Image (tube, rainbow, N blue to C red; front, side, top):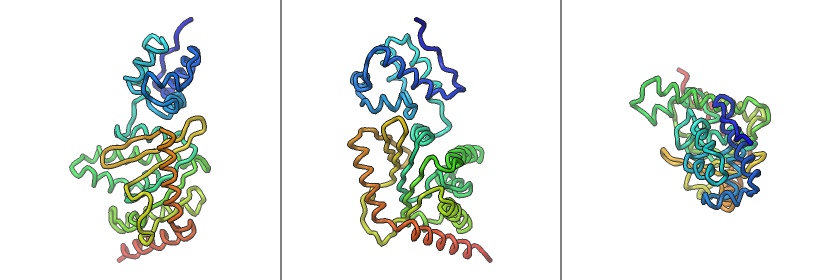
Length: 279
């Protein structure tokens, strides 16, 4: 019987690679857990590869070809499936985000990328890379704005964000940029496209003091947690670890203002920035 056909990189290569992995695994009679053991990964990770929510690294592709006797198919095609316009530390999270049915995010310092305006994103990237050319900054901003098209669908994914009050108070790009950026967040909230809460300074210590947290759920794959620090990020898929981060997020939400009070605060701060910018 002929082996699986090589992927066309122009037609959702990661989804096709995942479908071929499921087909080859089931053909050999292995469960996801059984395939994961010799790779030293969980069955959940194999499920995420098959669903296209995780990228297949070359070392995994080589071992999968050996275990499933697929004649180098996954080794040849994983390079095409891993092409991305995002930084390496965030590429896998961005691609998982694109197929998530729900995204819950705690943002301690910046407006989440999916909710940023062009001017706000430009100020952020310029601060990250003060000596970069305008062409580099333009490319980064364009990639971030393209991600925001996820919200063009009126219902999916569900996006629930908790912003620390520091996000509202930190002047990224100046008063005019902040006023427009917070106005954009408020407009998405008022249109019922997103759920937004603010964690006020008055809440004191809380369950996510260590940093940003993003949780993603999927229709046909286990949930993921994404943690990010300066220039690095990590996806977590171990069920007990993800459950612990889910609890942290729930505790942060419990300490935050209600959606109604949060919207009032965001609009009030946005109005202050707008008035400050006026002559």
